[in-house]
Image (cartoon, rainbow, N blue to C red):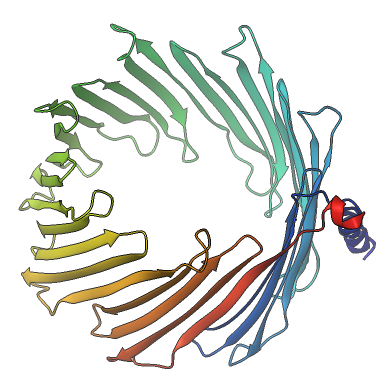
Length: 469
């Protein structure tokens, strides 16, 4: 109980400090909300926030006030205090107390500092009251940077923590990112507790071979030992160029209980430029997966000013899951009645893994005063052939001022279960307050039910130094 009182005192200090020292541009935000959900519950809640230069405050309350799940409220109070010993590297202390849905009162505190040469991070968390009351968990760690050159420091990050199962875990990570090569290594072990075990580790990096200053080859070998006692080896090779990309890799469990044949992949992208801005991209790829299947695929893409094209083909060409290919063809056509607000029509046809041929079309337009979006989709052939699904909607903006319009977004659709759904959303974002409301109902079909709705917003209270004087 003394600990809980201490946490409350810490939070109250934040609130008192925030109330007495509020600069111009740090408003309080109060966001009430009420909604009715699909289960017939009426929910009420409120959130209070303030983000400042020296401290932040965050609090909230939520309750099911009516309905089958009516229960006691949940709440949370917390914040962050920044102690600045230098203008660039403050310490951040963040206490927090909350009551969850299970009736537990939780207390925690986090301490952080990010500096140029080292970072520090520590935390403590405990269920101080309630049915899940237990011993605390904690963690302590950080990062030390050894700079042999001003641009490429080594980072050493040790860490120790105690988890919810009573295990004490220790780990260390070492990293370095350079212009010509990267290095990454790590070690992790449960040093004490019921899950004490052998350590896991990993060592790897990337080497860049530059045949030109802009398009280096990257070779990334890696070795690690996982939690199951397997030693894994892999290598990745990549190159990204102006006219083509290359990517290949190999992976194998070389020792341990899951020792198996390697997996691999080879692929890339070739760009055919008929104009400097709109190249065709052809991307073939072949790989061998963990199940012994050899997969082949190819993707073709082109993005243009007036239209886009996208097509692909994929097949298991050898192995236990050998099957017929899947494919897709589609694109987007833009009809410009004005230079800024084109209509986009995007037809698409594909064959999926279940042997179904699917057809769909999407129509979109985004404008200054209104948006339109509609679509239609159907399984036209195959074992899952069925009635089409569709949707129609949009947004209308009523501008009472040039910066803060009201947005009204009606929508109707037919889903895969045969339900016709209707809804409308109303939004406005302003300088001093936001408003958001909505209504949604299954108006026809097997899941026809009462509507759901929500109403809420945010108020910003600005107490500036000028108003106090």
